[in-house]
Length: 138
Image (cartoon, rainbow, N blue to C red; front, top):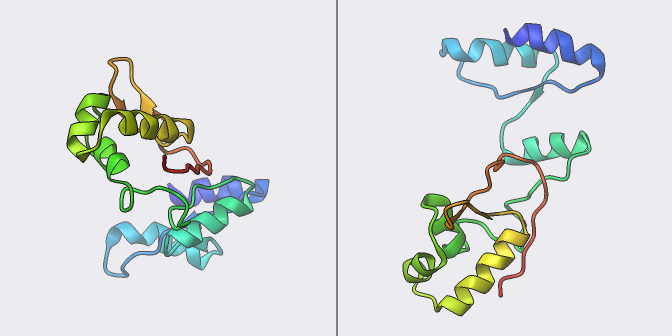
């Protein structure tokens, strides 16, 4: 299947990306074959980001020190793990409610979270979109 897709997109001027795998794994035969045929090998997040930027997409960079991540933002980590209402989020992060609401607003404005219909905040429905999101912590 992989080679059929690659045969269709490459002539149209699209890059073909593949994640290399173990030579012992049957599941890696397709991606490894694509790489031998000229597909770009994606070996880490930086490779993927570079390829997506090359395609004209503005990619969210988790390594940008100014960008909140689950590693450096306890509220974001809590909401990604378990969507919750503002009062629950304040309790989960041991923060006051005013700070939490401001922080929620900043994360929502940056597109990192969204308010769901039931009032909980969590990952956006289209969390896989490729946009650069920056936010200043309140």
